Image 1: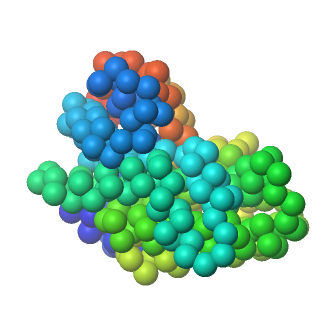
Image 2 (image 1 turned 120 degrees about the horizontal axis):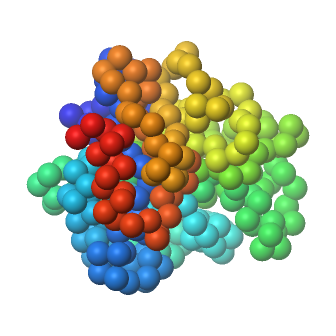
Length: 278
C-alpha cells in the first residue's frame, strides 16, 4: 500500500490518505548494538539489521538507508570526468547504504525504503568550504549531476522515497541554478516513480519549486498546497504534534533533519505512540 502511494506521490496523483509517517531515523538505531553510528554507516548488514530492528520495535513503516551527512559532498567532490555513477558507488558509506537497500528487497514485511541526502544548496556550500572555486552555475551543475547519479543508484537499488535536505538557502542569484539542480535529480527519481521530496531546515523558505515535492514545516507553510506535498516536523520527538488523519493534505510526514542518534529509544517509542495514536 505505502509503496504504491509513494509512486502516486511521484506523479502528483492519488487520493488523500493518512500521511506516511517517515521520521529520519538512522544513527539512533546504532544503540541496538551499542556501536558508533559512523561505524554502522559503513556496514550494510549492520544498517539493515539495526535500522530494521528499530522499525519493528517502533512499529513504523519506513527504513532509511542513510541520513544527510558529509558522504555526498565527499563523493561528489572527489568525482572527476566520466563514469560518475561508479565513482560515487565506490564511496564506502554510499556503497554500504546501497547494499542495505538491496538487502531490504528480501524483507517479507515490505518496508518503504528511503534515502535522505543533502540538497544542492547545502552541497555547494560544503564543496566551497572544502576549497571548490567554481562559479555558481558550474557548481550547481556539478552538484545536480552528482545528485542525479545518486538518485539513479538508489532508485535502481530499490528505494521508494528520496529526500533532499537543505540547511542552506540559495541566494537570489543562485535560485535558477538551484532549481536546475533539483530538476536534474528529480527527473531521474520520477522516471523511477520515486518522489523527490524537498525539506528545508531553514528559518524561511523560497517559493517551493515544482522540481521537487514540497515538504514545508508548519511555520514555512501552514495550509494545503496546490500539489500533493509532505510535512516536515522537528527532529526533536518531544515537539511532534499529532499525525493528521485521512483528510490531510499531506501525503507524508518526515523530520527537518535526522532525529539525533542519542535520543533514548524508549522515549522515542513513547513519542511515536503519542503522535500516531498507536
